[in-house]
Length: 127
Image (cartoon, rainbow, N blue to C red; front, side, top):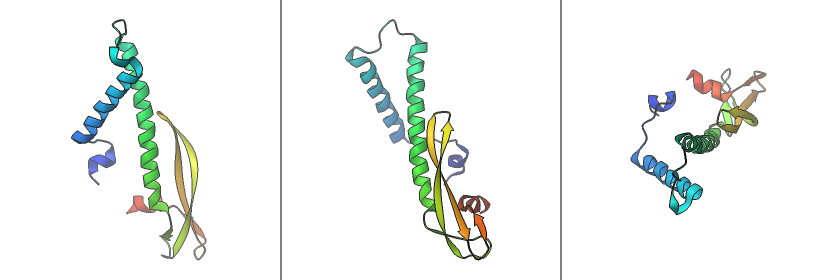
């Protein structure tokens, strides 16, 4: 994974750029039909539509990436104390983001040998 992908700066491929253009055209057709944006529409009204679509898209991207990220925490993980493989349980917490709610998974493991709980995501951060 690139450093830019980790810090939020991303250069999008032409394929993604084209899909965004297709989404914009779909929104235009659904909202205004073949006639297009009415003459009396203000930029503020146009911007509000863009903002609403952006929030919807951001929330969906968040959900999709979180669901994909959750796969890292399925199964057994080594205890950072003794190395024993321990099963994790994943609990979901509703997180209110600026773009809408997202069910955020939190994986927690327990090592019976060390009698300690550990969080695999914290182990990844240490690596």
